[in-house]
Structure formats: C-alpha cells, structure tokens
Image (cartoon, rainbow, N blue to C red; front, top):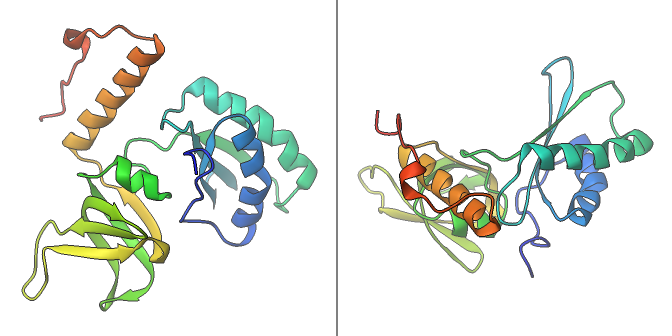
Length: 202
C-alpha cells in the first residue's frame, strides 16, 4: 500500500464521518491525503478540513486548490444541515498522527494520546514515539512512576486520538524537513547558512 492510499487509523464519527466519506476520494484524486475533519462552533459553525501531500507538505496554494475542489461537492451532497464556514488547513508542526506511517515518520518525538478504552487502567498517555511493530506502536515514558516500565506499547487500532507535542527539537526537525523538500523540488537552494533558528533555544 502506498502512502497516498494508506488508510487512517483515527477516523471520525457522525456528521464528520459523512463529510470525510464525501471528500476523501476528491482529495486523493488531486494527489493529497485527508488528515482530519472537525466541526467546531468557531464563527457560528466551522468545518475544518486538514489535508497534506503524501510527503507531509501543504502550501497555501494547495489549501486553496483542495478547497475549490471539495466546496461544490459538499454543496451538492449537503451533509451539514446548518450554514457553515469551510476552513482548509495543513496539519501544522504539532500535527495529529492518524496513520501508522505518521508514527514511523515522527519517531523520536513526544506525543499525547487517548485510547478508545481503558488500557492498564488509563485512557490518556504521553510518551516519545520509539517505533512501529506490526499493529503496535511503542513509546517511552518521559517520567517513570514507581511500578511502571520505561516503555509501553499501544495497539494502533486502540488509539482514538494522537498528536505531536510542540518542542524545540520538533520545530527544528520540521523546519529542516521542509527545507530539504524545497531543495529537492528546486524551490530553494541548499544554503545551510540561510536557515535561521533564532528563538528556538529561548
């Protein structure tokens, strides 16, 4: 299975799921991947669509392109009863992790998670992503309480929500990855002195 067609582990329910089912084929047809659909009370009612290219990038122009493609489809299918504002965005640095490949790509960074049901007496976890082993995700605890092991494993299918935690290391790596992709695509030259990290160590 290639990156574009890899199924999401974390999926919506209710109206949000209806919206996702309508727009995901349209988004994939354009060469992008759906990350998340969320309805919020922002500005009355806002439909937030998060998407990205298979390499993890998503420019302002990409957002506009996808928004123009899905808006008429949503108008026709009309899954939301009330008037709403459509907001298209990239996942951002502290992004949701919705596919196993997301955990693989961001191994070494801290994530907060919520499971579908109690696992070892809890539903909320926080840890550094270590690796993906089949259908399991392995993490390391930032701080270990008495009686706990340093590492813990969660079945990928039991994770309801997962999101990267913003750290200086995450910001640095995200900026470096973005620069590398721009260099590879010819949008930017590989001038190491031109990358500013001001404010990251403060």
